[in-house]
Length: 128
Ligand code: I3S
Image (cartoon, rainbow, N blue to C red; front, top):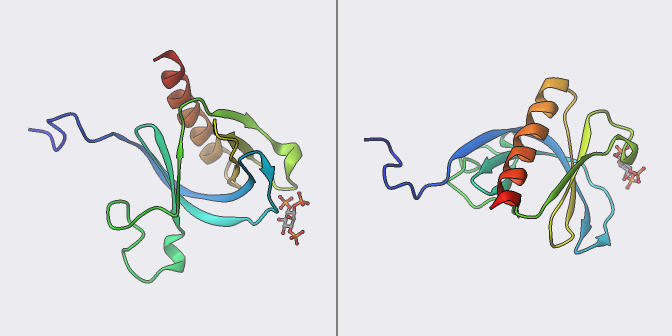
């Protein structure tokens, strides 16, 4: 049988390295601080882990440690936001609680895939 035969383990949709900065907390603007982040999309949550390159063990791996932060995608909004940065390929994710993140990759295909995968999850949750 499959590892998730009980259907209780949320599906891993996508994982990879993106540049990330939080720009608002509860609607209040924050100072930008770009950092590489290991981003994992599981079920309805986007989780941010420390960049594996800055760690010397396997402790960043999902399941082996807590994420640095986690975002509930229910009611979230996604939009391209190249006007908010001098970097290319930037999109903004806004949670229902008013937390805002910019995510970025220099690779066009990488950022397009992340955008569409996150948007798919948000749209699915909107229909529930
Ligand atoms: O939108 P901003 O304020 O021009 O963003 C830049 C600054 O946050 C800058 O930090 P300091 O002003 O604290 O030195 C960052 O280093 C830049 O990366 C930010 O701009 P980009 O265009 O990279 O998002």
